[in-house]
Length: 246
Image (tube, rainbow, N blue to C red; front, side, top):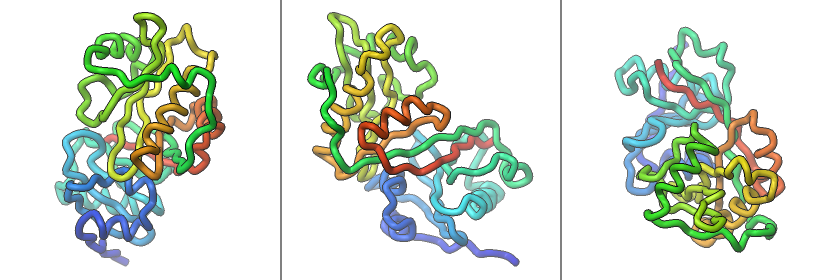
């Protein structure tokens, strides 16, 4: 049986089909003109943005993979592009999507401010003059992150100083209707002192002044970070698989 993909015209139609889920609200930015489709129990979309994932989906993983396999066959996708999909079994991909890389992560979110943390008052907004120090910290503490000074997706940087040194940092990468924390990093020699908790709590409080929901992404294997974020109020979660097309 051939299943036809139902076209969804524009952001509002995609959000309605996705039940206005916080992940969809984050992915779909006002002013962009995404293309969307419903296939069975999945809702998927392609984005016009040059930065970030080319597409995403919510719902059942099987229909989501089939949707993007069809788009790839039609030339709407190309090798090297990323898709953010519902959590799926990598064994289900061969013969449907050729994948160069597969990451598993969780999208966590909250609508409430985090409990106050010690040292939260030390968190400050950073400026362009801090970019060299930020780069040095990120290279040492979180070299695999894609959130770096100069990234056009970043609205603001926050950090904690110790004298002239930045010892913790995080990026405000809010998108769509959702506040979003990214690139959270603490210098290796300052870990275990609550700086990550202070940074996360302060940034969450700041972003909730502008958004009704704040979210973040964390690799599923990072159980220590997930435990911390849940303690800070990020109780809701969505399991995701990100794949880079081969």
